[in-house]
Length: 165
Figure 1 (cartoon, rainbow, N blue to C red):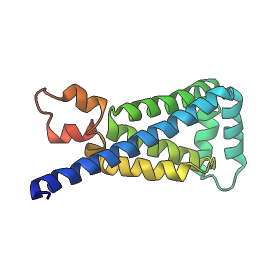
Figure 2: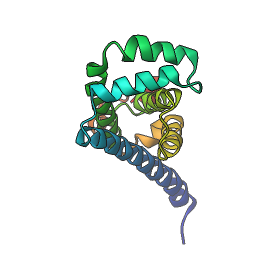
Figure 3: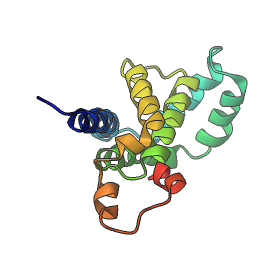
């Protein structure tokens, strides 16, 4: 027979495991995104294609067309290297559980960036749902993480700061 203490401890543990799995799944999807781009030779030409497509696409908001032309279009080589590097970095850090909340928010931002450019891929809604869940439950999602392992046994981190880790 289980006691109330056993049941009350099992629910938070299960929630932490589910949230950590969501964080790891999100990270794995970002790693795949970055790896596919590197494997395909993603680079300057791809960024120029996105910038040109955004400039001519009526579904792309005007402010993003400006961004595509004046930012993406002026440094396509840097973005060609930076985008897959960002995706791989997001993925690795999320899998490890480093800076969970800021990286979940960065993932949401990057996905919005892709949507604004009308670059829609089937897994993006799944990634957005996972990123939103990880962001909302960041302290729970980071319970089993590299950050938690490093901080274990050390002086407690203040609650507002802990949420960002």
